[in-house]
Length: 280
Image (cartoon, rainbow, N blue to C red):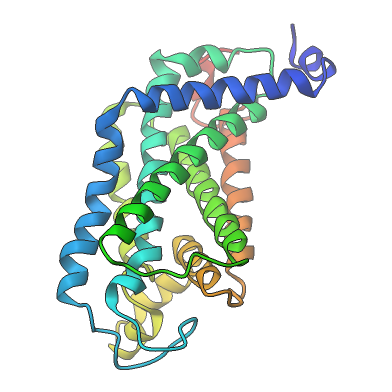
């Protein structure tokens, strides 16, 4: 059956592929108990150790979206949720490289389905896992005493912002997997993506602090960092405030990252010749 025939079979065939790929990822995740623990250790260390040492570091000013003084653990909580989403998105990139070379994706890429739909299914599966891990972190953070305003109608806005961030970072992972030809190259590539993206953002400190301290170039990089806008959208959504242009930046980057990834995995037009090894 060709891709055209698969499309003619109607949306049911496409939805079956989506549910199969998502359920497969959930089942694989359920068998990797250490994966959830490792995903939570890093942000919880930041929350329990660093936040304890700098709890009142932002008591000197009241800035948007906050209406009162806040403690450091409250400020970095959205950034730590972003950390969970970022690391899972990058881990999905590693899994994609492995699956493309010797796993299930090698077969899926030859399935009679549009290549873009297969990648979309993989992206949705990654986002679902990211959201589950983020929810687990939020629950543990609440148990540790971090008070965040989750209750209210704005919770819908929070879910939308977090989902969009998970999809954008998952799409970035897909894009990176196009250029990673061997698993050995993964660690180096991630070091040039994860840590600059995370530390040059508002996840740990606000933009006005960077500008005030004279770190002009870091301030400018943080302003144009898509991860900054993902964190700020979640932060402003928590307090039911207008996030400005952040949603448009996140959604725009999501479309660009996913579009380039689809181009890269197209065996006719893609770059790097990666998908040709995965099948026609």
